[in-house]
Image (cartoon, helix red, strand yellow):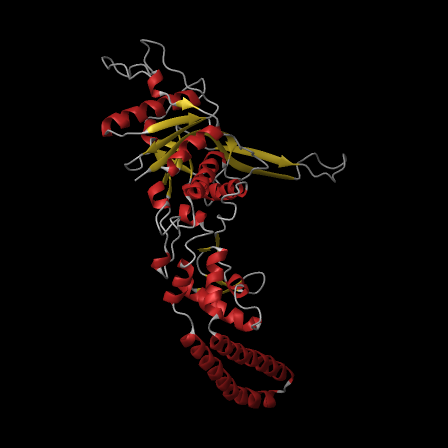
Length: 454
């Protein structure tokens, strides 16, 4: 596969960018020691948001990143249908469709619409295509109207009966309950019968899937990049062209505790001098290694962005937005209390004409240790490990770099690290040949995205 890879070293100060179920910064054991960790899901969320902002500035792909992952499908589906049809019928049909895409639940949102059981990733064009497919079946709207009318009659009759029972005496109440039991059974049969007729005439999964696939992700570049899973219809599943790892600290890292207090502004000097509130928060600080890659061949196939209507220049703009987002995005957790928004210290961008993804996290399997900062030794280990991996597996690549850290080669005859045992030979030197050209972010992205046009 044609592949672009990003190997990123980023130093974050006091922060809690990704929390576990008890509010602590996430961790993992790697190389036998505890590391700070940012999950790939956390990073991907921040990258998706940043990618949309980057794409919005491009005339070529401003309208290509419209995917929305939500449980609130019903209202959007109803709005995509013919508005000349009555709203209750449209909502009923929307519920039928939502139930096929992802099982409908009994839980309602703040607007009273039913939610589906799982987050469903669709674009406005895909939802519109479903609506248009339904608009061509006028008899279906008539059946849906009959169904919703039967439901309304049942609801109204139930409310009336409840009011009568509340006002009735003990003897009359028993008679009313017996009469209502027969009437309710008839009403339920009417509702069930109308529902079955509507369901029988409803679009099947194949028709709904065909409508979704007919638009070829024309506004779903984010779905092409991050992928989509639809358990109810595997034909709608899209394999993501982007790959991510969990970010791990390059060194041993433990969580620490911040004790804080807050003062009650309304207290007078005569009151006690104690705090109005006290509490604790956990935090960490670390230099993280994170990895992201994109499969350019997969991005350009017919199930992703290979539609003839999308040019190579547009695909290049999509990749550009992705690269910038990966470099710039920072998870926003606690950004008011512990703002940790920093830029990467060092990014190595790699293009491979063929091969498979190869992250370089094992550069830090033996944790970095230093009293004079952790970025420089982390950068040295990264570059030396990259060279060793390339030699061992015969990998061919072209590489460039960017960031505020500029690594320098080792002085002659001085090893990068001292021998760890008597008789052990010096480790390989970091020479000028191992250090990629260093560019600005604009030049970095331009150099990498040029390969999209090959």
